[in-house]
Image 1 (cartoon, rainbow, N blue to C red):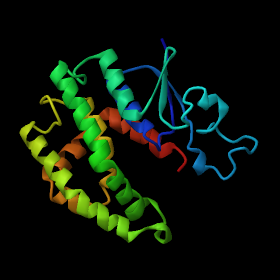
Image 2: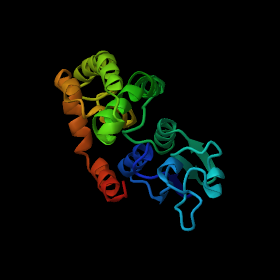
Image 3: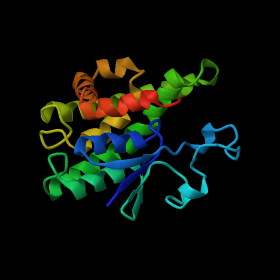
Image 4: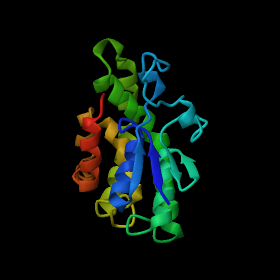
Length: 220
């Protein structure tokens, strides 16, 4: 069966492509772009985007990423990663029900406790032009994130530098791809040295580097 990953690299599809690289999966990549990034999504020659009929047939919600795995369609990047390791196994997959619970727990924790604040740091400290940045959102994020960073730092110290299981797993990918958004706030990482070392190690992995090289080659 053929796995198809829908979504541009500059989206949460990066999580799924990194994992697929780690698992050595063969897949087709369809670079669907977010509709809001296009000045005229209906213009002749416009790329496939999140409101294109051909993509809405895969995900009627109109969001990336999504996958089609031999006819099985799934959305939500973290769920996709948990599904792929559940199907393909190996050391990145949870080895038992307890580890599966931990992988889900850490993925949900990162998406609820960290992601919105980390994205505000990414956008309002780095990605947006100065005139679009909101210092109040940065201030709120910098007030909210030290506690979850400290919790993750403690877990990494106890876990030998990994989120769970004493080894690199899908949980590291799911959490790292959210923590990455906060990189413009160096002070968060200075206060959590285990988080910094862990994220650096994650980003040094060949599978991440392959994904990131392709991301850099993609139009901003």
